[in-house]
Image (cartoon, rainbow, N blue to C red):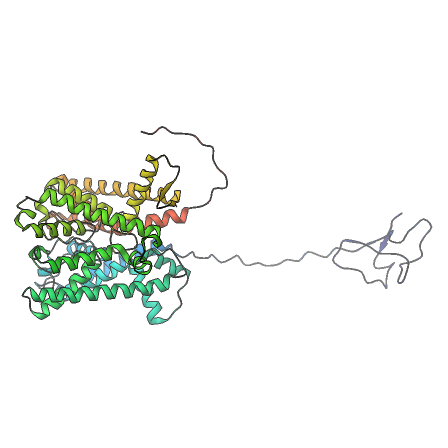
Length: 507
């Protein structure tokens, strides 16, 4: 039998717990609550303990945590800010050779072309701008080529000495394409050193080449510096005057050869060049390096062969040159179409088949993580690998004994398809705002998207609305594929289950 006991009267000497609603107190032994009645056993007594009164606590509402912007948004904002600053500087009266303020649309177009390292111009860079304006354009090219966020993070790391955090390293990774976040800062320094060494070497060789061509020493040094930076960053902007680009050096092997080497190295990027220089053996190279190098060689040589065959007897282009110079200029045209923008022969004089080939080369572009544009040769190679694996009946995309993850193939398809739709939409928009031929407009739109800078000569004659479309295309072409890949990677998440499979008819 259990007996209720009031804790305040029956057990005055018993120390009772104060957190329990009901406790059992053992009767008998030392400190017993009283005599054990007949039929009772130790532990049969029950003690009631009064409940504690509830307490009220005032809890402040949690502060709203502001999420930092995504790296893609920061990159877009940084490039836009740099274009805005460049536009204001180029609008200053002393930036133009005639002492008059350059119109907003022309200054905006030039700044966008420089930051996006495109090379399309509506005013001649060599004759319209003063030394100040050309310096502004050169700085915009350098910052745009390396990536605005890459340069700013480098300054913080080297000059300020601040340790970079995860968000900063993600920005560096997004700008330069390094897959390892832990080594982003070290890679950033190496990229700066690689850039400085290559550009200085190009500056020295080009200065000597221009000096040997009859230019005075100050002009040779300035031309060498400007074109070395423009070539390495795949900008294609020149200061020769009269929209001539490098047509005056069509037979100068040293100038064209040096510019070609600079733009190829800039188009490959530090990651690819560094991997080749460090490992030196084909079997030890990373899969990405093998794919990029092989595709680059095939595109360069294939483009040289096709352009040479199509333009060999064309008096407006290669037909006016000696045989060896024809080979040189065919190679240079194939190389510069991969987002460089220089031209040693008249682009407007090319036959339509050559223009179509250049459109394809400009759309592909060069390597990811480089100064070049386009959908990138990496994306193009992944698509080819997937097509080749599908034709062989493989269940997955494989190359050089390695498997390419399905998500990479999906992203490559998304980048290529959306980029093609953008070029098509911009071509239609240009056709609605200008009266040029559709092939010339398609060439212009692809050149702007691929940040190439080649043109059939219609750029200076575009109306203001078409200029804005081309400027928007240059901006989208520079940052669009990168931000799209970042957005797709950020949305990637594992599926908690496998949906049921159902086939779709294709073909």
